[in-house]
Structure formats: C-alpha cells, structure tokens
Length: 253
Image 1 (cartoon, one colour):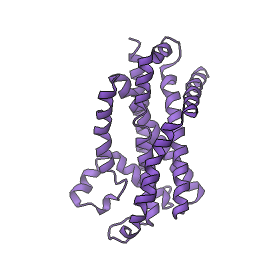
Image 2 (cartoon, helix red, strand yellow):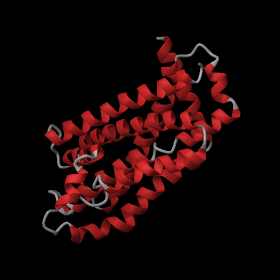
Image 3 (spheres, one colour):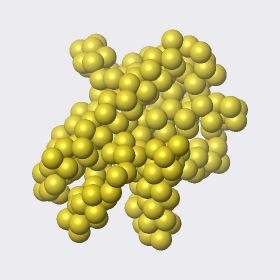
C-alpha cells in the first residue's frame, strides 16, 4: 500500500509538470502526425508491390508509427531527469524513505500514460485519413505501445542518471535509436527488403513488436506474432524497471 501511495505521488507530480508545460507532448506527437499526413499517402501505391504484408497501407503504416511514438516519445525523457538531478530535486527525493522502485515507477507510469494518449490522437488522425479498426483492436494496440513506452522510459532514466550529462546522453540515445528505427520496419515493412537485410532485422526485437502490432490491426489478436510482440515488450519493461531502480539505488551509496 505504501509503495502504491509513493508511486502515485511521483506520478501526480510528473503529471502536473506536463500539464503546466505541454510543449514536449506536442512536439512528440507532431513528428508522427507529419509522417502520417505527408508520407502515409505514398504507401497506397507501395501496397500493390509484391511482398507487401496483408492489409491495406494504413493498417501496416499506422502500427509502425505507433511503435515509433512509443520509442521516441520515451527514449529522450532522460533529459528531464538530468535537469532535475542538476537542480537538486533528485537528491532531495533520495533522502526520503520513499522506495526507489516508486521513484522510477511513478515517472514511468506518467510517460506510459502520455504515450498512450498521444497514440490515441495519432489513431484518431489516421482514421480521418482512411484507417479502419475495431475499438478493441485500438485499445489492445495502445496497451502494447504503452508497454513499449514504459520500457524505453525506464531505460532512458537509467542511462541519463548514470551519465548525468546531456552531451553524453544524446549521442548514446541516437546511437541505439537509429539502428532500431532502420531495422524494425517501422516506415516500410522489412518484407520489401533484400534477404540479407531481413536476416539482420530478425535480430532486432523491436521488429517483432512492430509485426505483432500489425497482426493486431489485421484482427489476429492471438496470433503468434502478437503474443511474441507482447512478450518482448513486457520483457523490456521488466529489464528497464530493474535497471532504472538499480541506478536510483546506486545514487545513495
């Protein structure tokens, strides 16, 4: 009970900060919206290409954008915790008896909520452009994106608090984010890629999350691809939470 209360206190604080200054949330959703409106229509002809996955172009493209939102909407939240550490906020939190899991958990839940809200906005915009998906499919998809956002949020906090430098954190994040983006089939399905690139992408776990979400939008909720995508997302959440909490605990030593 105490852990839940402490987690909620941190979550509520982060939520108030976001509502007071929603600039970051607006910027995070702007890029996927631009991809949706300026790049999405180009895929209607690409969907006729041999090797394109089942379904129309929107049911293939929108899940990729949602995964991109889950990753990039959370991967850079570490900048905020570096600023809090520099201003002494983190030190003041660490001298309290609050659980280190609660300190990271409240932040991660906040970021997860923001990603899911942004995802809902993106799906609503996509439906105006031609996406058709049942309500249950949309909800399941948002849950998967929320899990992915939570995972990258926790990993981002752990990395940022370890480095304590924007100059080190930014290139490190980009170094991992770019290969993930290029080898996950977010914008274009990897089934269109040459064989060697498809083999390389198989080692990227995010590719399987993308394929799982696309299976959801095809209505294949219990398909192996969907279950694998959820399993990978949950594994990343556990890994990220463990790393984030460990880094928080290390700050008090």
